[in-house]
Image 1 (spheres, rainbow, N blue to C red):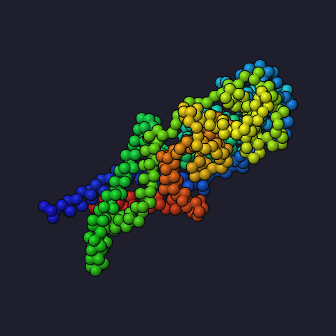
Image 2: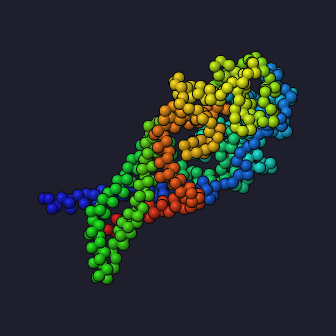
Image 3: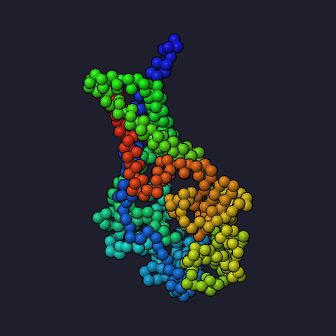
Length: 478
């Protein structure tokens, strides 16, 4: 009885390994081949664009003749949310955000209203980023939801989707509220995005039965793959002496290698097991965090400003016009302040009724917004201005500069210019983010350069694919 027990357990592990491997074969093919497309999509075949950022004119260059109150009164606007000054087509405009979240463009020289102003500004920005003033606009639409071509990783909404009639099929997404390039796609990247969405993230499952169903299927699939890998390693651990004896007898007898596929499957599987473990564990962690619903779903922040509350002119602020990059308005502690961003990314708050400067105004506003989004009145441990992306607050978040408001182990990143919560990072989010970028995307190899990192990730994915295919070949041959 006892002598047969090890053999029974070996057989059970072997059968489980074969069964799990067969179940995992199609997902492995799907994930590895679609994963191979990512370096091409994000690096080698990524379309280029002439400009990736927009440098606005300063206040001295804009030279508005009328102040904000005057142009608002000319258009009989009593209430609004915010404003900015923008310049395009050789004209300076007040971009006014209305209570219905639409934008109205008012001429800064005479107060005239520009019809379809936000649409025109969207085309202007798209042409600026593309540096193409001649290609016809094929179609322009206001995008208010994410889709397969403009995915949630882009974060920004609403944006204008500007499609140009060019051979490369270029589509540019721009956010007029902050002069931002959200993303851009040509024909090649559109195809790769579609393939990646369907074969790597399996978005078709969401269309069938919802997001939770998609995540559950992905997690079960990852568990099946882990089972195949772990049982394979266990089988090798039990039988490695037997494999060694078989190899020695074959070499002495000069018999043809009838177990070629099994041998390559075992050796290569052992070699790439650590890489596969990194891929699968980081994927499982990533999916589990998404299923937990850890990210906040905050109530939107909207302020309302009365035109008659503006006693101080926006054209006569105690800051040199040559250093002012942007002016907006915020409502804080029942007071209205001009929010002035200078050329050093520092923000000053000037009372719109008294002209007094509010000390540490941006920190106060970031704290207020964090309390709004979190639904608490806790005082933060620290507030720090973030001017550049880093490992915790990466490029995918799009928004800069932001204030990092820290409560214990939670960091809330607030874009005070728009009053938006960019992201919240807690202990679990931080661990998941680091595991994904280092174990799944190999950011630990950044020192070697993006090309080398992508080549290593491609070889790793190909290794997993080859192991699976050799295992299937061995199964068929047997």
